[in-house]
Length: 305
Image (cartoon, rainbow, N blue to C red; front, side):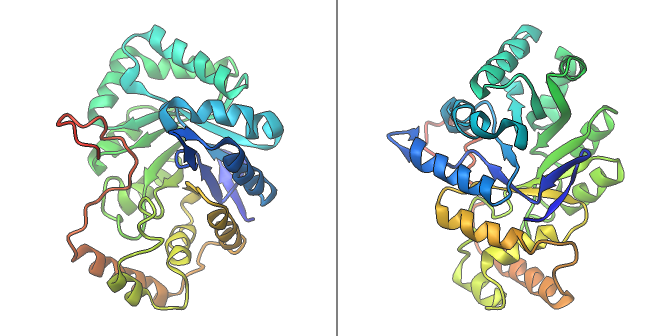
């Protein structure tokens, strides 16, 4: 496992995204998922990312009973405040205390305001959530403050420039989405403003692990599609780590092997050109830009997205 710096912490370049565990009867498959976490830990992964709504609010509780209970002093734990559920300052306190209880810990290493966009940013300011989050940090209940993001580049810059206490941010990025939401420009802008950056959706919700035949043909056989996608991000000096929602042991093993080789500048100019061509092929097809994150649910038209 290779490591980089995130807010001064030594962090594995591969983090575990905890919203895609295997399930049984709409509940997390406890034994199978615990084995995945233990193998990730033994392979050197020390960053575990969850959130209040993941797995129908089961993810935090599951982590508290497994990786947190077994290895709290040796891991970095991240979770997020669902700002859309916070209507009063008291809601914020209630949710945060509930998160501590479910996770079985008295502090969170990395706390994020979840899925900010321009509208939610105004909501955060109106309720004074920045000050409330900072107060928790001053109490030692939060170690580092950041936000995850889904909106335009202009909104991203507004949020970064709107508060001087941000330490890190989490953005969606992959070799297809270089101009989507914050994109490469946002990655570079955040770093220029002193924020460390975590990457989510490096495989576009798994679609880049098994891309369309035309894209796979363009990539060739020098690297697997997953290797190409993850290496594209590790190649960048601005990236502290990327998150992968690994739902099977094969995925954990494959990603651990790739993370052992991760380094800045790991892709050649030829390989970067291959990825650029693969993006052109992907963009020419009528694909829906969905990563199965579920953030659009429930659908106002009643569709099971």
